[in-house]
Length: 297
View 1 (cartoon, rainbow, N blue to C red):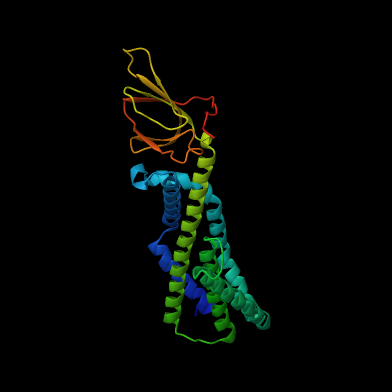
View 2: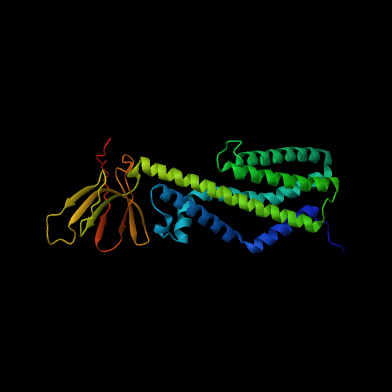
């Protein structure tokens, strides 16, 4: 007994093979973890770089990057996963319509061709600087344009019953298309992460009070000289900590170090990020009451 024909025809089989190969190379869990890690790394490096800290000093781990990106990427990832679930069903429905309503589908193919070509042209024009678009919109435009064009071409070959290229060449073309879409997705994630990092850095610059207020006690004088920082020598000569510093905000604790910002970070163009060792020579306190510092105008 012969097997029933595939509803998706050659297109469905080729897409299935391409996705099967991709699924063996990159599992969904690995793919999601990689996206989260990459987004978190680019965002953190951009944000801390804007605040004057080199990423090599931070020593953030894989878990740190992932946790810092979950809240910003969970919704887009849910949308992508829902689309991935719906796409096979939508493809089967389109194939059935192509078998029954060829004329209508040909009109849809024409629309897809116009939209896909427009997306590619807009993306290429933006890449060459001839068109102004948000940086993240360039890879999105290219990706959607390429996907719509390739899918429209597949439908056209099915409706017209033409085999412009061999089955092996079609598999190669669609595999390359998937790889191209993944590269464009990586580009999009990078651009969105950079935007998020710059936005967070701007927020910290304009309102350092959003960070935890920090009081530093030190065994020795640290010479922290920045507007808003108040140094107070403690009177007890036998105390373990002899100096107290107020007017600081904790930015990050990582790699056995405290990364701090002066309270007057936004108003002082010469303000610098401060890095202190996380050892017994220091004691940090985090007051609940946040009083605005007296910063120079």
